[in-house]
Image 1 (cartoon, rainbow over the protein chains, first blue to last red):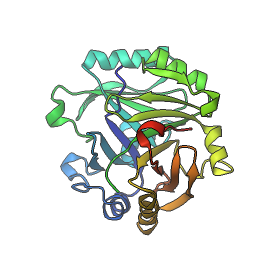
Image 2: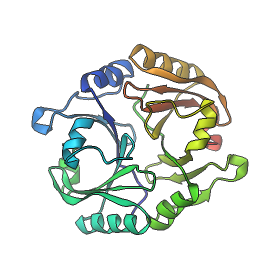
Image 3: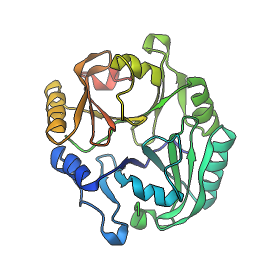
Image 4: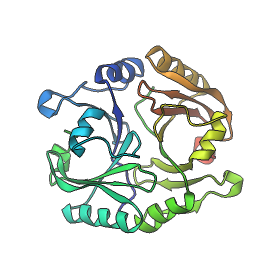
Length: 140
Length: 140
């Protein structure tokens, strides 16, 4: 696993409130709340260094996990772009061997092939791969 | 406030366990647990894009805040390098006006002049300034 964090995601309760805080208050540039076609559940900011910063509705994560955010996980998710689908699987295996835990087995999601692990403290990492990263990689 | 996250910090319970997980398991390069002279309370990883990734003992944060991590905050801290000490103060003021809350008033810390706010969901941001960033900026 190469040492990089491509997206920092914070879970939030209210997108309108978050928009007022981050865009209007702090001046972070964004196109605003995602279109309903893109899930309508997040706000994307492109940071200066190319990292993405995402505010994601906590309720939307609950849908992804079938119930709720994995217990013991914190309110942030660090995303890592893998090199291939096999790389996603290998990184998740490495994480388990190292003492982590699979939160969501890798699966095809609208934004790519992705799985999630929890580190020993419950912090969530999303490991994802998309064959057309530049154009299509968006949190959905 | 310019749109950038310079350090992503995750709070952890056990540095040895974290080192086994992130360095030995996932292959993240690091010099290991910080020297006692640097606090001995964190592990620093330099990521590919220049962002720093830090694992910080939760108990150490408790010391900083006088008691414990501010209630309602998540287990991650996003750090932003401001342009000046005045900029630190202004960003914290902007955060309050926008609906955030000061977690720690700005103060001179070993790694610079820094203050902390919580966003409306309780996520912590550290806003810091150091006159000699390149050489001295380290989480301590």
